[in-house]
Amino acid sequence: MNTRASALSDATRRSVRIGGACGFWGDSAAGAPQLVASGMIDYLVFDYLAETTMAILAAARSKHPELGYATDFVDIAMRAVLPEVCSRGIKVVANAGGINPKSCADALQALAASMGLSPRIAVVDGDDVSALMPALRDEGVRDMFTGEPLPTRVSSANAYLGALPVARALAAGADIVITGRGVDSAVTLGALIHEFGWSARDYDRLAGGSLAGHIIECGCQATGGLFTDWDRVPDWAHIGYPIVECAEDGSFELVKAPATGGLIDRACVAEQMLYEIGDPGAYLLPDVTCDFRQVRIEQAAPDRVRVFGARGRAPSATYKVSATQLDGWRCAGTIAVVGIDAARKARRTGEAIVERTRAMLLAQGMADYANVQIELFGCESLYGAHSRTRGSREVMVRVVVDHPEKQALALFAREVAPAGTSWSPGTTMASGGRPSPSPLVKPFSFLLAKSRVPVRVRIGEDSLDVETAHGVAVVEPAASLAPPAAWIDPVGEAQVEVPLVKLAWGRSGDKGDISNIGIVARRAEWLPLLWARLTPEAVRERFAHMVRGRVERFHLPGTHAMNFMLHAALAGGGPASARFDPLGKGNAQILLDMPVRVPMSIADQLGTC
Image (tube, rainbow, N blue to C red):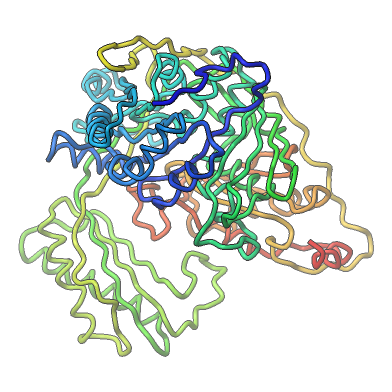
């Protein structure tokens, strides 16, 4: 493999260029070829893993010991680009190893050999902590969110490792680094630590590098994907994948390849910064505790955004561990109803399916369902009391049931289709056949001392120890910041209601059972007004039909933004949730439709935004 300088010894070299090719297992195959062909990258990074993915990989390895990794990385992505990656000297870092990074590396090595190539492939080991589970249960370790004791059997248990093992592998001469579970941004930060020689105590730089990784870890979400102003984003089909040009001080600029679709826009980047970060003053990562509240995001050119101002402090002495448990089975059936009173008919259909199958289960001596969820689509059921389309004449009902026995759900699956001739007029359904039961994955999380998680890098015949940042017992609190200036309505001026989307951009995601909604003011001078109107109480009322916990709000003055955390809002969240939107992806859209009172002087400006 052709090589370039493995570390920045040339003072004239000002940036490291990293392309984000993948945001999840299932992302488009277009990313890696586009980025490699651009000639604009030094590193190609991939992020594949989520809690559900880890459970799927564990099930795959239980049936086939050579599996347990993201096969698309080898079979699709690297098969398409490996020769050019090698000829251009592009380094690759991917968390595609899942729960079996060695097998992933072996498969990639075999692919390379079949092409007459011999890249040096390193594997990061140590994130799998499943062997510690019996001892941790005996010690009384509990889920960090629910307080539940750890289960007796788990499918997977993996610590979120940081970036230092990636940097160690690159320093050892790796051309390709394959990891198991790690924080999503680590594939980027590890490359930057290596290239710039940052120490484990360069907290501000580490925070900046982590933010660069965070911006590109979801692929095209940085380049126009999911953007509030979606109608300004050209050429979705050929959207450009993100490239960060990172400087030694931790700042970076976001670009994309020429002649690609998408959009490089400061507002879209601000949305992505807020995506799933929780408290922006204490974004906890294994290598650094990040403070993004004073980050500045500037439109440096029509196709370039500059990001700077991240701050960092010492990380904690623990890793977060994400574990999964098989908790029975789940099956979901859908029926469409067309016509007058479609929503009422659809709900009654769902209720009848559940009532009938419950009686059948009882008659056969089987237990009742562990959980039942009936949701309607087409009548804005996700909006709760704020729905405006209850009179819809096209509605789909989705019935989700959980049960300890797969056999019980096979019975349920057989009883969905009979609704087509038994009950409501206007009943129809898409082709696709009978629904199939699938394993129900229950995630849980806990903290584990870093000292109990030895991490190693394996490259060739060598096995290298990795010194990780052990951190502090108690993370230093972030410095307090003043809230936005108090808003005072102009005396005597008429007011009107406008949808929040006229005043702000927004994006939402999840952290377990917490819905995270980031809101960015379209104009800095409007943030005091938004702060006054979007109180935690007002947001909780907007989501009263789904929020069972508290609502927190955080201020980010650098981007004229705020971040909301809605606790106990996703019916368990992730794979445990039976909701149609288990990750809260639509919650920002629901909030952006909220009416906000504004003075006429502001309403008159909205057409110019």
